[in-house]
Picture (cartoon, rainbow, N blue to C red):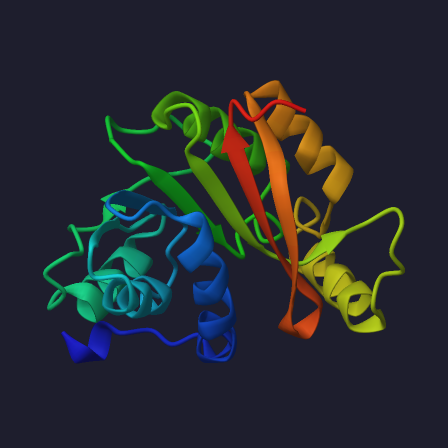
Length: 200
């Protein structure tokens, strides 16, 4: 299955920084559902880093599902990948936390709406939804590299692009989540930790 493994260079650069946030935000045990697992490299690394958690990878792309299986097939604490389109109807799945990396800007806005709606249906009160990626903030000047990235995304698909953080927060609130914390990450990215039922 090695030939089915796809590689995203950014995962090697950001996985340790993300893992530090996950260590504080994730429960000590239970199941973590990863939405838009992509190549599967993050899942394989985090499953090794957090062996007491069960990892449930997923993606809406068939080639990605094959890559995830190739990267994670030998991990005892990783379940077979699920076909989940964040914007569509989710299958019956149980999770104690949800992690999603680099999807919101590389997908239509409907995927963000579906992510929070699905997370709201799956997670119990107090459970975390953790997002990683670049965002636009009204009170922070956007890095030139992120502006260029935003333009390149929109050139590839007009429905894509960096999302305004206040819009994401509003969708979170509409689905019963509030942002617990924001973490500055390498390469002008953020990790956002939302909690279901967190009062503001």
